[in-house]
Length: 397
Picture 1 (cartoon, rainbow, N blue to C red):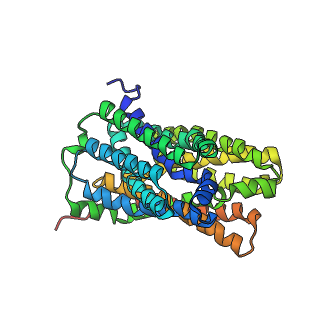
Picture 2: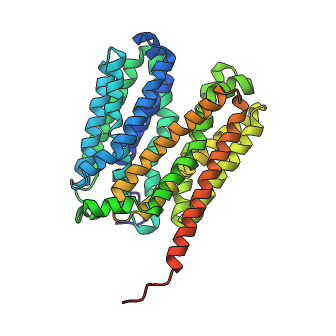
């Protein structure tokens, strides 16, 4: 194997990530159509996002444990089958309850796909490229924000929201075919699955728990702001409604740049990348607070926010994988659940701040404070690692 060549299987994983990322966020651009079509309020339609996030959080550990002894290629193909059937059910839904049930079904594939996919991705490349391999898979998620979500919004506007889910169903079929053809049948991790007791001990260890908490609080700051990006752009910065999509395109471009950058930094020095990318995110969030009144500065800072946000993904994911050597798939899936919990926490904190009269302009400062908490947790994790490495061995009895 050429150590510098990207294995084709990573592109198959990226296609799956593109489909999952598109279906996760597509509903944000379809809220008004869904609300009008199904006769529910915008707030109720918004719960379709919360229902999906809840399904990811619950499904990630449950499905990973249930499939832990199956070959990983079979698991990934099965998850994409669930994803495809779930989106088919969304495309056929004619009531709010049916759409919610289909969304939850679809979400069950999310956490385990990214969790197991991260482990598989690292098994396809040499040690010095493992974080970059994770970033390659997550490029699909970045492209979903850049291309998939706007495309679904366009389909929803011109052909109805069902058309968007038909398109995502087709992406699911393409991902299944790509995985079947390009993913090797066996991986080094399939050979000797560890016991359930060992896996549970691994994920309940202090280093893994601190790593998961770092993901939750480090990433939550993004969604304090991103949840309210439309009113921030229109009500605070003064952009017209037509400018929201172009500015969000800049955000997506930032994500596409930041993702591989974070992977390369993590490959060079994981500890420095972990703290450095979170620190960069906190700085950008502070800058966001100053940029909101100036249009060009807001566009630039929105792009930097996407870049800093996704630069943290590979280091956070790789860190948890390293801390849970005996339970890589479970820990990786739990960390994907932690990212989704961060999304929900950030959205809740932002909503609570606005509801209590803090105003939209307070959100970047709240977001930065949350991310700083994540940095403190990362620093604690690094101190714990150094202490473990320098601790003297216990003498034999």
